[in-house]
Length: 278
Image (cartoon, rainbow, N blue to C red):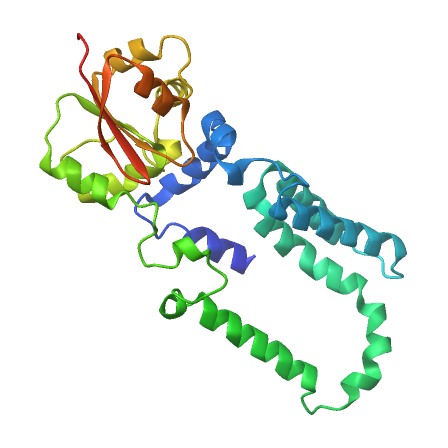
């Protein structure tokens, strides 16, 4: 009870104070968040995160069936709530692991006798040192100082600045003023807000802060649904900054349009300027 009360109070140490609680509830129930953000999608077997979740669920159910230990009602409730949360969203896998870990340990206690002889000696075993070495290696490889050589990070992303960061495109925009509002790929929003503070972005990675109408317009534009050019005019978009990977339908449509001109291009970014009638 004290730990729960303390956690409730500790969570108030944030810029929003009590507002953090309705914020969490609103994010979890936001249809846009649940539609577009991968971590809020239900787990599926075809993803590594979903595969791990269902594998752990299978192990726990098997332990419940075959173990001679019988869990208390409160432990069963904890497991049920954790499993329900895990089935709702990938990001809830953390809650599932916290809920399932202690009950699973209890279910596996009959196996303890089989390892009693190995545990009789208090001296560290060779296997213990192997585990320590693995943990240390992971810590070293995950540190920022070894990022450039770490096999845990894809080759193209080992530099401090990811290769997909639109540094050159931002420099072009800084020295080439354009009229109208900017439309940008969502993945570019936060970076542009940092390096080009005087150029408001269309959208960024804070997905829960934008209206459903704005997100619907963004999707309609990126997929070039019928009427996308009218949305551009309604939003007074004068230029578009688009990531080339993955290439959007909008990038292709603008190349074929007689109202949009490509003014900049590199291996990661295309910039188009509107030159049609307003």
